[in-house]
Image 1 (tube, helix red, strand yellow):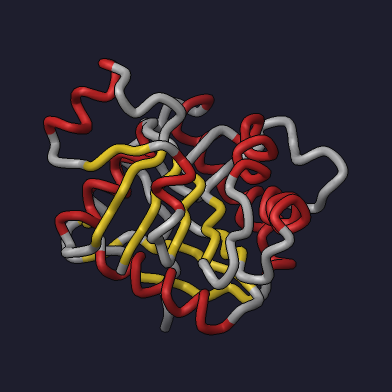
Image 2 (cartoon, rainbow, N blue to C red):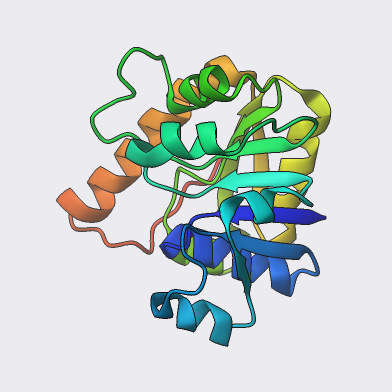
Length: 201
């Protein structure tokens, strides 16, 4: 699959690296791809380009950016067409005027293929989602069935158990789950090596 990961922070780097290892074609889109601060990404074998050049050949566009920057970034994507748009963002103060970050991104982009995923855990778990014999869960929601199936497969490709939680109206629950993970990891000082697991009997 051809994937544009927009953003080169911890989450963007972790996802791009793991998908590249899994055999996908990955381009990391950033504002200034020649900047020396991205040398570690190049050293890891990742390809960097401007955001429009990353989006152009992609089938999936992954927004691994701060939510505060999301509106400007989304507006700069242009027509996303048939591309799947994956929202990994979290709004610590809440997405003002919207029920979820994904609803905001759908509004700004006009896309019907917005999928919420990869926001409920940290970058360390994206690099390695295994806990003994268990795999951490990745919760995913969205309205477009085929788009969601693509993202579910991307989650499985990097080692997660994927859990489909429904339509994009459930994105607000994933936003809250992310806030709980952050609270436990940092405020409650449990550390980043914690993950969600849905157990069934």
